[in-house]
Image 1 (cartoon, helix red, strand yellow):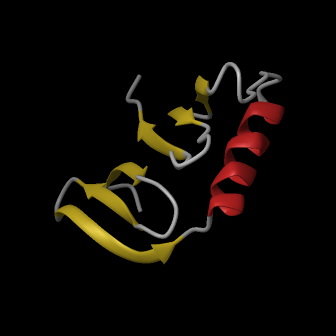
Image 2: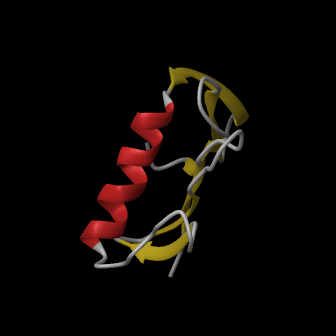
Length: 88
């Protein structure tokens, strides 16, 4: 959908939030487990040949017209990410 501006994952077991041009902020019915969020972050880091570890904990990359910002969780803090469409 070309109207999607941003996808926000605020952590495990929380519904993804979609920011849309026409509909505003929408809660989806998509809920990810911690291992799924970490897997997405790892795959993006691998594709961009970036390292993200428990020590560095953050990732901020541009990929295919999108800005991907992520934080790996540790202990009681959950991993999270934001995917934002960037208009050239």
